[in-house]
Image (cartoon, rainbow, N blue to C red; front, side, top):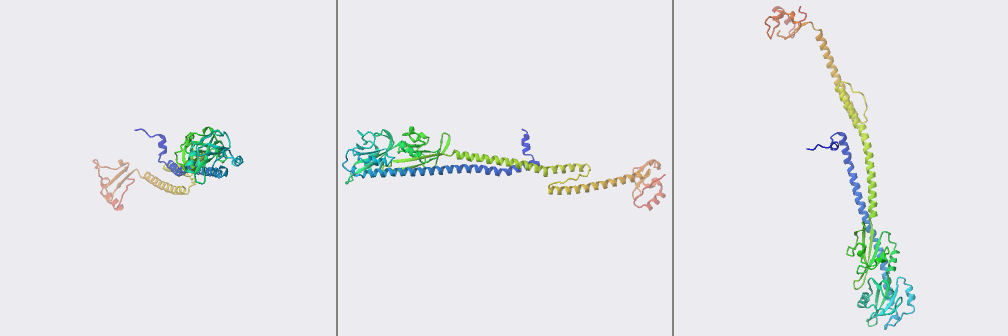
Length: 438
């Protein structure tokens, strides 16, 4: 069977010193548990604050974009109400349309198309041979007779990546005879995101109904038209407070639908914010707190060890030494103890030691007196009982006339004769010591 190591012997020693050390360690455990709970709570708080921040940013961004969409929708509907675009449509644009467009910087181009999808008015770009009959937003506007939003595309007139909107032109018989089209470039939309005062480490993305990127922050035109998966997360994730990892960093993802038209075609916004910094701050606070607690424990350990040694261990060692001195018959030396309890114990011990030494001195004195008395006895003596039986012979017994055949049990008459024995027994009825028999 393996022998226990010295370390385990020290840790599990039953000495008072190590028991007190173990008690001190046990008393420190609640503090360590509190620190660990504080770390967990700080991390959860940081994660929750990041969620709330992402939600707030997403809500603010959605409100901004929603207002922008309302403005574009209102402007497009107002264009449809102009008399110059009443049926039948005339080829060419009214002279004031350019001035109106300058009042709406978000609008890159304005077009009027007939029911066949042919452009009869284009404010910017190429104006010949433009037909949008194949565009979904045009089809949806004609089919639903309502405002329709498009998808990521490259605009055929201005030859730029854009997102288009359409509103039908309806005559008095409620028949659609064309549509008004407004165009927003993706570069401009991303610039709007950049001016939204988003956090520097945040990611904001606007996608069409197919999950294709039409605006992003930080601005990266190379991602226009790419699927949202290019950022490392999916549009299939829950819209509220999903936790994702991008490039080894934890992020909070929050997404919302900004607008949905009659055909359920939607515009969506995604806001992604890292919370590693908050977690790192919580970890840093934890390590600082743990270090401070450790230093405090070390300081308290040193102080406790000093006080323990001064008030308990050293006095116990002095008492142990005093016991050894008492075992040698020495009177303990006087010394003071800082602990009232140990000092009281020492005073009782000192009184006990004094009592013991006094008793030992008395016994020694009586022993010395007895030895002196025995040394003062004559050369020969006889100790008998009340009946005259000899109990003990001492001294030079050769002076006595012992019988030739001495028995083991003698009577005084055999040594002194009948007459002397009767005389002595009459005088000393209890015990006779005969001295100086010569």
